[in-house]
Length: 273
Image (tube, rainbow, N blue to C red; front, side, top):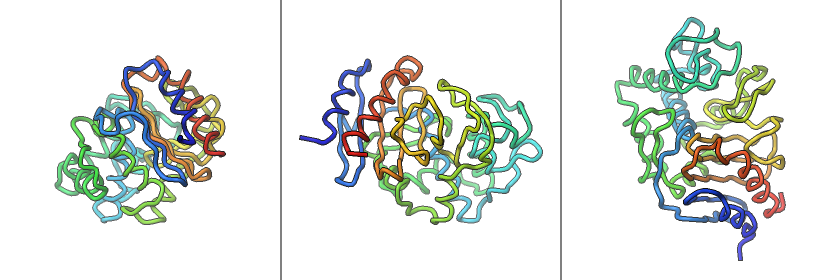
């Protein structure tokens, strides 16, 4: 019998054809569903892309202060959705550092910058820098780096372990990535709501005190992660020492806020957090 039986029971009642889940906690890693089922991660691709960008920074190929895009916009701005670009389209909607505007375009610009600076196609760079070293052999980028990584829960557990205890980037870079960047910016978490402030790190959303939210009210303010519009999410709570990855295929606006917070609450409750 698993300590997470209650939480996994909630998942069994979700209105999706199939879901795959893993929870990492002090007692080990527990899976629910087919851990080898492979699908597109949607925007959960962004933290993977961000890790590749941060590795390029540490290698010296690029820097967080590199100018990319409109005047005043840097790699750091784009990683934190503070570059002024909209969800898609190359025309800026605001000046950099003014508001948090969630942007696929910004991440695609980052991939182009890494390609230009290294001479390596980003699809190869992310594999060489992130997937291969972590042993994520069933993970690949096939399309936009903002939304088109394909993977399995089994592989994503390897990335979650990296997010809990980094091996590919230095501790200082890691702490910068999971801390609020441009911390006082207001913005919108797509499909969830407007928040002021709307904290975001470098490639990961930071929970802060957002209410309502797709994580649980039990999650600490330092919880970081991401969700994808196709029906995927992952989070790491460094205070509770718990991490979770879930992949399914149903648009988040059809079921996410109705079911995800209760599930995440149950995960932490079952573990006594």
